Amino acid sequence: MTTPIGLGLILLLGLSTFRPQAAPAQKLRVAYTAFAGTFTILWVGKDAGLYQKYGADMELLYIGSSTKSVQALLGGDIDIVYSAAGAVVDANLAGADLVMVGCQYDTGQTSFFTTAPLASIGDLKGKAVGVTRFGAFSDFVARHVLKKHRLQPIKDVALLQVGGTQEIIAAMQKNLVQGGSISLPLTLSARKLGFRELMTTETIALPFDYGCFIVKSSYLKTRREELKKVLRATIAAYDVAIQDPAFAKRAIGKYTRTTDGETLDATYKENVKDYALRIPYVSLAGLTSILEFRAETVAEAKKLALEKMFDNSLLQEIQKEMTK
Image (cartoon, rainbow, N blue to C red; front, side, top):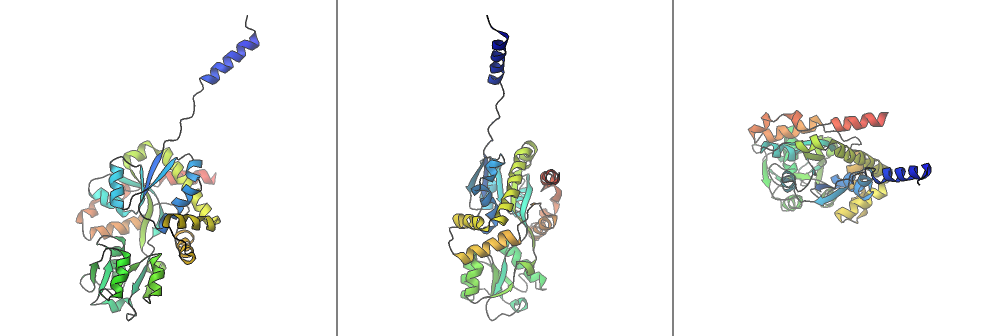
């Protein structure tokens, strides 16, 4: 005969047997597109275990261009692309429906160098500036700098595609071009070669969204909570990077395979301390700047609806949680 106590134990055990178990976090496949300092916060979050801690089981994958990573996103091979806002503009121009839910930076980080004989941007008139390729960040910066100094790209100053930033430096050494946009860590090499650093990130002052979390609109609708976990972890990663520079520099060194102390210090300063955003809202000014740049060569870009290309509501909800 079962006693009341025994019956209670049986019922308790039975209930515990059928208690629903928490579903394991679904792995999020996140692609980043370069071994550059602009990915520092993402790397810190991964190496510090913060994405796992906040419930986002992140698999970090390297795909060497924004075009290829967007193709993988559209094909369903990855869930999130971490890249520049220009990738969203270009994909949506081609008929995609992508959206950004956060961007770590709202200012384009680079310096503009000229060969030693040129003492001002105005001296570039009648000469040539090197860009990696038309439509790339270096092209964007070159056009912005020239217009800022009342020079017309192409008409007043030739723009030559050379393939890469290393190639811009090589072309300047050969005097094939007399200027160009050069970013860390190659700014250190450009200075040592004696090129003139006429403008820095601060004086170029280019609104530009990058370090952006890019997803399909359908994914945003169905996976809001997972994306909020990613964003919470990213904010925590920023805090770790600020509070523990040594850890952040180790992450930079690991992913960029850099051991040079000067390079690590400069990369950390610019990509974390100076320009990273703690709450990584998408900047309307940065997105507008990119859209206007694209519209110069692709008229259809003017028809894209800005408000459909970003959604800051997840971060707004998170910020409300943080203030309670």
